[in-house]
Image 1 (cartoon, rainbow, N blue to C red):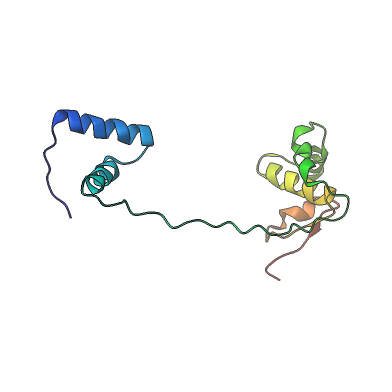
Image 2 (image 1 turned 45 degrees about the horizontal axis):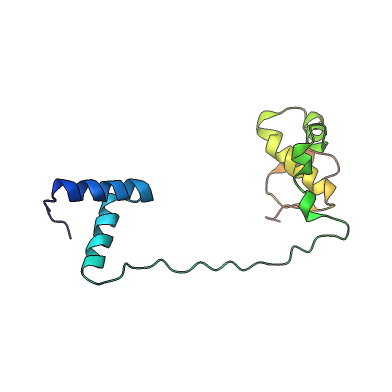
Length: 127
């Protein structure tokens, strides 16, 4: 419902401060304050459940070392990028290609740019 409400300056300032502190809209902070004042609880968001799954990495692959390729300046992504012939929009592809080669895995994008990187097993998910 839309209505006009006149707030006293000190209350409006307190609500505005709380809205800034909590990074919530003024309207949401005001509605929560009114609910608390009327003895109601604010509606809650549904609980989010994360269901982990097994990664099924190949023996010898250390999942704690995946980012080392990004940390090493002479790592494979640079070589893949050079072999691909250009940079820019292929930088992320080169990084993913290097991770796939390092982990003896496969890449499953519909993007045929991955064919330019040697040693990468590419599977088109649309086939």
